[in-house]
Every structure is written in C-alpha cells, then in structure tokens.
Image (cartoon, rainbow, N blue to C red):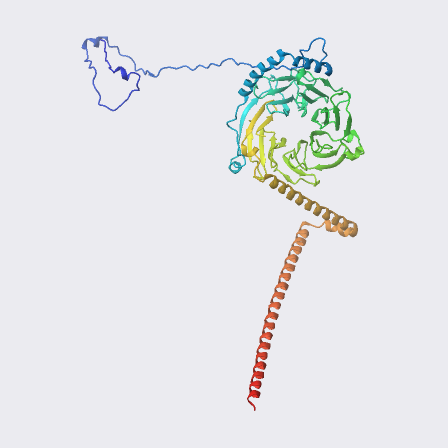
Length: 596
C-alpha cells in the first residue's frame, strides 16, 4: 500500500522559509488491523535501535599552494656612449652632449618623451586622504588613550635549525627593510648543520629574505651605514669584522684577518661620524675596543684596552657586552661590561690611561643594553640582571631612577625615538615591557607576552615580531620635554645630596677611628640595644630642643604684646593730662579778658 500526501504551494512562494505555527493534529491516514498478518508475527527479544534523522556530514580542509614572490632590481650605470668617447673624460662627454643637443631629432624626442613623463608624474601625484593636519589639537585626546599594541607581522628564521635573532638594524632611509644577525649564543650548543647565514628582510614581502648575507662565522652584530644604506658592517662570533655592499651580492666585500681581530664574539659594532663614512669601531668580551676603516680591514687603525686600573693590561681588562655611541658627542662613547660596570671613555684623550673617564657600577651581572636618551644625552639607560636603571653623567655612585627587581632576567632595552620619557625592556620569559615614567614609575605602562610606531623584537628561536604600538606611546605629549627634564634634574639633585651625605658620614667615621682609637672601636662595636637607646635619646633631645624653642618664641611674643599695651596706656594718660592743661589755659585767658 502506497501512502502519498501532496503538499501544494504557489510558484511565487517557492524558496521561502517555512513558517511553523501551532495547530491541532490531523489524521492523515488510518490503517486498520489485519488479522491475517497475525500468523506472520515472530516474537523477538527486546531490541533497542537508535535512529538519527540528521544528515551525516564530513569536514574537509583544503589549502592552496603558497605563492612565493621574488623582487629583483636593476642597478643603472652610465652607458650608451660611442666607442670613441671615454665616459671618464669630462671634456669629451660635455662636447658630445652639446653636439647631440643641437640635433633636431634630439629636440623632437625630448618633446615627445616629456609629454609621456608628465603623464606618469601626474599619475603618481596622489593625495593622502588619511593625512593628519591638526596633530597638536589631537594631543589632548591621545593622553586619555589606553596603551596598546598589535602584531603587524612575524618573520621566522627560514632554516630548519632555529637560531637566535641576536641583533636588528633598521634601514636608515626608510623603515621598510630590516637587517637581522642570526647566531646561536649558547656555549658549545651549535649543531653541525646550523647555518651561518643572516638576512635582510623587506617588510612588504616577508615571505622570502631580500638578500642572504653569507659570513665566514655567525654574525652577532650587524649595522647599516647611516651615510650609505647599501653598506653594512658586521661583527662575527669568532671575533672577525666584515662588511657588505648589497649591490655586490651576499658575500662580504672584505673580512678582517683573524690575527688582527677580536678573540671573542663582537657584541658591538657602530659606525662613526666621519667625512668618508667608512670608519667604525667594535667591542668584544676579550676586553678590547678596536677602530676600523672598511677600506682597509687588514688591521685596526686604533686599539684600546678596557682596564679600569689604567695599566693597559689585557689580563685585567673587563669584557665588553654592549657598546654605545652618540653622534652629537663624537669623541665620547660608553661600554657596558660583563662585570656590570659601565665605562665612559674619551677617544681623543692625550694618554691611553686618560681615555677611561669614569665608571658606573650598579648591576650584579652583565650589562646587556646601554643607550643614551635621544633628547637628553647626559641621561642614559642600562639594562642588566633583573632591573633597568637610568643614570646621569653627573652622579657616579648610583643611578637616579630604576625599575623594581623582576622575576625574570632582563635581556635588552632602548629609548623611544619620539618620546623622552618612554623606554622599552625585554625579559627572558618573552615579555616586552613599555615604560612611561611620567605616567607610572613602579610598573610598565604596557606588557606584551611574546608576540617611531613600529617596534621590532627578536627572539631566541629566530622569530622577528613587528609591533605597532598605540599613538599615545609614540606621539610627543604636550610639555613632555620640560616635564622629563625636570624629573631628571630633580632625581640627579637628590642623588647628589645623598652622595654628599654618604661622603660626610664616611669622613666622620674615619675621623672617629683615627682620633679616638679604642673608644671609636668600642663605639663601632656597640650592641643593637645600645644603638637603639642612643638613637632614642637623640630623638627626645631634638624634641625637647624644639619644644624649648617654641616656648621661647611664645614668651617673646606675649612680652611684646604686654609692652605694646603698656605703651598705649601711657600714651592715653599723657593725652588726658594734656587736654586738662589746655582747658585750664583757656579758662585763664577768659578770666583775663573779663577784667577791665
């Protein structure tokens, strides 16, 4: 028996959603029992059967093949001259140019190409519709913005065996390229198949490095030349120095000899401000600072031993872990050492011992970062052990500001290039902390866990994370320079007062020990209870002296008020007596006038 139920619907209602509603049940069909089927009934044990009326679905994933894009460039050099013209001779080239410019075909060609060029220039003359014209008026709104950051891109080490991104250097002309030095800094942990390559990345095409640098030893430091962005200098793990010209490929143009190089990894390599733009200097944990000219890397032009005893003994030298140079102070530089001491140096000193100007000691371990404030060069930041410290050149004994001790070791730090009160620190647990001490001193304004306006962070696994921080952290606030300078000066003054007080106490202790002999020793060896009693006695003496001073002041004040009242009474009495005499004289004059 076939049961059919027909549903009808207008063609205009096809495809519409079902509109369910409550309605009473209807009997569509009634099947009466058939006694003849009872003989075919078979008894069975109770059976549970589940029926799922939902349709079974299967999930499939598909991923398209990755498209690798490669950028290629062409370096244009002068050419196209006739064979009889030497391009190096200016007279021949100028004579040929004058002759060619007089030809009629030359003029017609220039007119024709000029129209095409003008059309292309007009196409490129685009207007930035997002340009901000009133930045100053928006400063108040930025102050209320909560600090934040978002990840723009993540660049990973393309090698199978991951290495640490030891150093990052931004392109000096445009921040669209990033040179990264990769190396494994763990002692005796280099794998046999570990690559020595470092890379230059184009941030607009991060799928593949723009250029592969192939040093003889892994690079620990790498820096762009600020005068020529095609030139880079790098310090190797084995102590050698090398430089590259990106127009000539990934192989180094020249490498320093092993005999004349450092004996340990080069942790700092910085370009100097020179007319030629070819001079740089480097520092290493072997205790030396070497100056180089890349035109002749066979030997350093100058050397300095970091011996703070000023004996120039290499066995006493402190190992350099970081290097700092400010172009506005061309003769000065600073070195952070493995022993936690910062050495301030002057390259142009008359004698080698005078090159070490002063030292700053405040860390319990190596100084991993050292940077001067770009707005106030006398203020510098150091990062080491579990803290970051801010120093002033005027105070040698202690820093003027410091962060609290963190649970994780600090690994690096730097100042903001836009705001004088903002600096950045990184920790061993993968956290990036952003500090704004005008806003908060005890804790960072923003902490990011392993993830101008763009910030680059390198990790131990070779991952480069690019972060765009909020505009409030990268926009100069109103009156921020003055506020930051006032805070630096106040903290410097406070540290100077403390230093003077400490020196005074030391001198007193020395005088007591020299003048009193055994009595001084007994005083130094007094018990804690005697010291407490002595301090309590001094405290009450100060309180008693203050009370006596106030009592004398009140007595003087009351005495002066009583004297004033007495003087007023005398003046009043003298006034009444004078009026009486004046009255008597007037009466005598009247009586004399009445007499004939």
